[in-house]
Length: 90
Picture 1 (tube, one colour):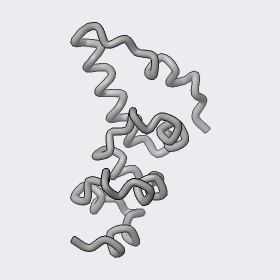
Picture 2: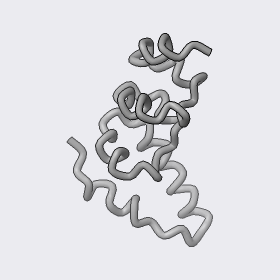
Picture 3: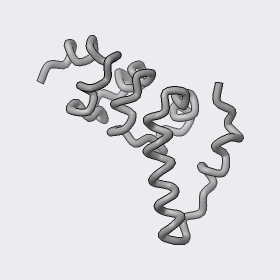
Picture 4: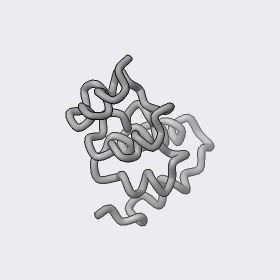
């Protein structure tokens, strides 16, 4: 289980410099694709990078709840998304 305080500084980051922005973007991308970060992302949906979340094998329930935000092309490489893809052919 991920502890909130592990990422607390991430969620309180001050975007005052280009390097801070780069750090913020990098952590957003990494966190959204991390298979153990789902609970943290559910609690902070404004921090989700939906493209990266689409490859997260543990994010299927969250993706089903937000189909309009799914990147369907990226989702096709998610091995746990077969049923979701079958239910939404494009």
